[in-house]
Structure formats: C-alpha cells, structure tokens
Image (tube, rainbow, N blue to C red):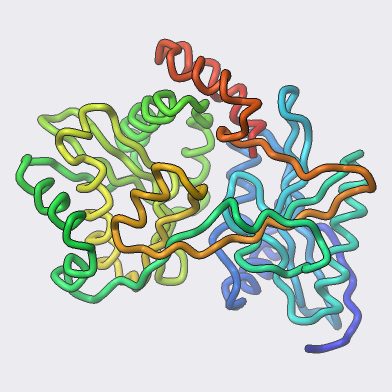
Amino acid sequence: MLATAASVRTLDLGSDSDRDRHDAYVRAHPDSSAFHLTAWGRAVAKGTGQSPHYLVAEHAGAVVGVLPLTHVRSPLFGQSLVSNAFAVYGGPLADSDAAHAALDEAAWKLAQSLGLTSLEYRNQQRLRPDWPAKTGSYVTFRRALAADSEANLKAIPRKQRAEVRRSLEFGLDVRVASDERARAEHFAVYAESVRNLGTPVFPRALFDAILDEYGADADILTVSKDGTPIASVLSLYYRGEVLPYYGGGTPAARALRGNDHMYWMLMEHARERGCTSFDFGRSKVGTGAFSFKKNWGFEPTPLAYEFRLAPGAAMPDVNPLNPKYRLMVETWSRLPLWLANRLGPLLSRGLG
C-alpha cells in the first residue's frame, strides 16, 4: 500500500461539490456500502436530529480516504461516536495505511473533543486487530441472485421453498412505491411489528428522509390482503445489491405467510431491477431473525465491530438482548400501539 501522508478535514454536507467528490470515491471503493454515502448522514440528521461528521482524507488534491461518523446523543443511553450510526456497516475506506491512520487519529480527536470515551467502527471485517471488538455477536447474510425466477426459487431450501409457494395461494397483493400511501402503510406495519418485539419504533421522519435522500435507490414493498397491509419493507439498492432494511409484519401476516411472500417478491423485484445480489442484513446470533434467514439458505458471515476506548472505558452494549434491558423490552411489547408510536421515536432517535 502507498505510504503517502494525508490531511484530514470534515466534509461540508451542504456543499454539492464536496458531496459529489466523497460519493464518487465511495462508489469506486470495493469495500463500500450504501451507508458510506452522504445520503445516509443527511437522512439521519433530518430524521433523528443526530449530528453527522464525515471525515475526508486528501493527498495532492485527491480523495484518498473517507470515514462517515455520527455523534449520537441520548439522555437514556448516553453518547457515542459511530461509523456509521443507525447502520449495520461502516468504518473507514482508504487507499493506504497512512490514510487509514490519519482518519483514525482525526476520529479519535473528534471523540475526545466531544467528551466521549469510545469510538465504534461497524466493519465487515477486522481492520484494527489491536482494538477491542465484538466479533461473535452479529452476522450478515448475503447471496447471489440468479437471472431467472425459477433458479432463485430452487436456491431456497425445500422447507422454506414450500412456505414461499404456499404464500402464492392466498391472493396477496404487492405494491412497490415511495409515495405518501406507501410511506404511511410501511410505518403502520413496521411500528406494530417492532412494538410486538419490544423495541421502540424509529421516527417516521427517518424513513421519509431515507427515501428522499436515496431517491430511485430506495423504495417500499408492501404486501396486502383484501386492501389491508400485512407486511412491508423499506429497501436500499447499491451497486447491484438490494438490502431490505426496515421490514416487518402484523400478526395477520403469520397465517398468510406474509413475510415469506414479502421477501420472495422483493427478490423478484430486485432481479427485475437488474440486481445480482441480495443482502438479508444483520442479525444477532441465536435470535429468531438469525434462524429465519438461515432457513432461506443464506450462510452467516461474522461482522467485526471494533472500538477504540479511553483507558478504563468499556465497550458500549445498547441492544435489546442485553439482560439489563429485558424488563424494558417486556414492558414495551405490552404498551398500547398508540402510546408506543408516540413514545418510541423519542427513545429510538438515541439508539443509533
């Protein structure tokens, strides 16, 4: 790798030229994701009020590295600096060890200036072997999409394939859009789904901002029965890959195989868009979501979430499976939906 020094500055997210240079670098980098784009930081800022800090390493006038960061503040869960918050992937992208090191140091100085004791990179593989890391907690699931429908159906293991075929018998309707109707239906379904799981729903403003910022690279697929939405998912599209990111179903979806139908129809929709890969997203090992994705024939790939910590600081652990939050989860799942939808966005905007 190159050994040239790099200078680091904070990107001006309000500058079209700055955003264009940054995003051009991201799209050309083999390890990038949709969450590295400036669209994510702008959407998070609009939808949650949290503060994005996009660092750019430059040498001789050229971009040689980027590091998207978000400063997340919560009165309940504390503060954190994450690459990238509200996302499953992140971490620095760079052309050289020198650029990586410059981004690391600039990020740590930023964390210290904000009074923080930890810095988190949500990498897809280890980048800093000397940093503490969570390597056995989260996995991602990815698989190639074939060019024809029958090949994709055959790639699904027999038992799950039978569930998909069964879903085709219930007369379910599918709509793909990003208009007001799609947004309202998605939020209603998703909010009920996460309430039932015991977690607060993200603000609808976040979903709206993601759709607005990503434009044609994001949409909502909703499954309905007799005009009533039962399953819905907001997906991102990036370099030929679809990532269903915010999805869920109502209790009615279970008997109608609504979630099975939703993901199968998303595969079909993505294939028709020209996608060649399906990213089923992150799951925590040992959860129902983990098992569900394995049932579709996807093999888990461990994620490496790395932390730089101040002396004596511990790795943050804000997730619903943390035993300290068990009572909160159980209580939340029993809240009336109207109350959960009112309180949820106030809490979730600080989860990151």
